[in-house]
Image (tube, rainbow, N blue to C red):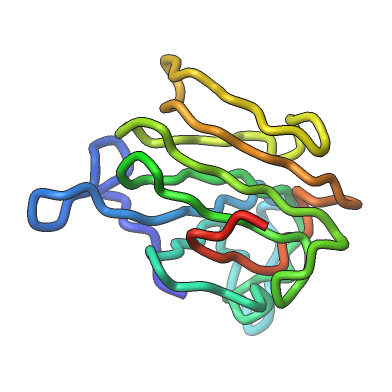
Length: 154
């Protein structure tokens, strides 16, 4: 799955002069001290590089630790990602499509904080860049992400 590059956190990540395009899933754990198999603690951060679709997030290390997801999206305007609440890009358990509309990092703290079945246009503010988002509600969506696809608008 890859690990999170902490050197990119507060500054814009760059490769060859261009902004790195990636989504980072953060999982706020209900019990941060939980050990998961062989004494490892649950990993809270998953980086998904541009173009790398994940049909089944259970393949991510420590997927089964309980918590709620938030995410950041870096890349140029027009960068689009869809996260699904079901494996293999199924829509029955909800999905969220996010498109960046400026060059700043977008950060969504609460993946369910949008009206169901409507596009929302959000202007940039001190915490996040500008974006458009479409949310199709599903049960416990922000806790049960199942798959991720780049450049897809269902």
